[in-house]
Image (cartoon, rainbow, N blue to C red; front, top):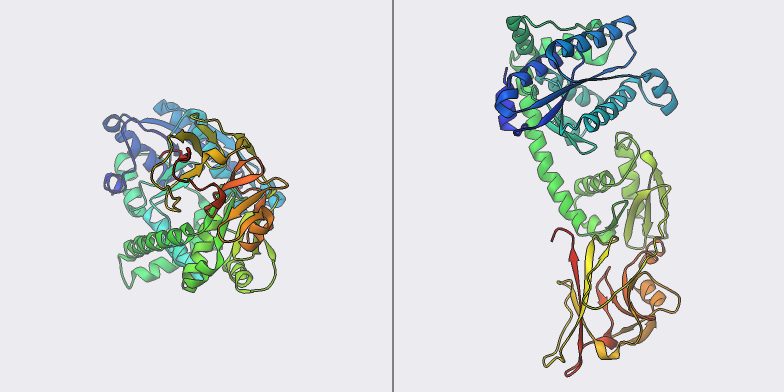
Length: 465
C-alpha cells in the first residue's frame, strides 16, 4: 500500500496525535485501522474507533456493528458506536438517503472525536473511490471543485479529516488484507449496479481499463492537478473578497463595482467563497450554479435594493454599491457602547481588538491622520464630552473639511452606506461629536491637532497582531 508515502506527502500525522478511525467493517476501513496501528509506536499515537449503523441494511448492518465491536475488543481499542434512523432523518429534512447518511455520519464522528479527545478523524476513502467520484460528478455536470475529487485532507467542525488510503488502489488494499489474513465484512449492496456508483465501479471503469490499465491512477492524478488549480483560483478569489468589507463572522459585504470588474468566472468563485464563510445549514451543497447566477443578476441590476433567499437559510441583498450575504433570520442592527479611559486598553469584541487612548505633550509638529494605519490623532484640548467607542445615536454630527458640521445620517447617505449597516458601524465619539468613523476611515476635521495643543492618540490593536 502507498499508505506511509501518502501520510508523509500530505503531513497527515504528528507525534502524539489522537486519531479517531471511522471503521465500517469493510476492507478499506479495516486496512486503515491496521495500518495506523502499525505506526502507533513510531508516532506515539492514541487510536480510538467509531462505527455508525445507518440501519439501511437490516440484519447485515447489525452484524457489521458487532464485527467492529469485537474487533476493538480484541485489539483493546476504545469503541464508540451510534445507531441512526437515516430514513426518518432523510424524510424529515427533505434529503436523499445518501445525503442524510453522510450528514448523520459526520455529525456523529465529530461528536465522538470531541468525546474521546481526538484531534483528527481518519477515513478509509481509497484511490478507486476518488476516480469514481470524479466520473460521477463529470456525468452529472460539475465545476473545477467537483473535478478535484476527494481531497487527502478535509475538515469538519474544526477536525482535520485525513485519508491515508486515498492514493492506494482497492486491489492493493485487498491484497494487504489477504496477505495478513485479516478478516473484514463484505457489503453485498456494493455489487448492485442499480446504484450509479456501483455501475461506474463494475462497468465503466473496467471498460476504461481496457484502454488504459492505469486509468484509476490517471484519474486520481488529474483530480490532484485540478485541486492545485482550484487552490490558486481560491487564493485569487480571497484576494478579490479581501477588497470588500467583512462586517462580522455572520455577514459578508462585497463592493459590487470591484466585484464586477473581475472576470465572470472569478465573480462566481468569489461569491461562493464569501458564502462558505457564513454560518449556514448543511453546507452549500444545495446552492447551485443557478443560485450564483441569480446573485450575479441581482448585483448587475442598477436600480433599487433587492433581495433573494438562498438554500441553507441564507439571503443575498443589494444595497447601493454593496452586496450583503447573511443568514436569513439575522437581525442586522447590533448597537454597542464602550467607555474609553485614558491609558487603559479596552477590548472591543465587535472588532476583535483593543483600543487604547492616551494624551501626549503639546505637539510641535503637525500630526496628520492616515488611512493606512490604525492610530489616529486628535486635538485633546477641544474635547468636552466623554470618550466612547459606540454605534450611532440621535443628534450625532461630524465635521467634514470644506463642508463643516453635518448630521451623521447625512454623512451616511452621502457615502451610500446601506441602512441595514448604519446601526452597526463603530464610531469614536466625544458626546455627540463623532471623531472617527472606522468603517471608511473618516476623521473629524474639527479635531485635527494644532501646534501647541495636547494630542489625543487613539490606537487599535487587533487580536493576534
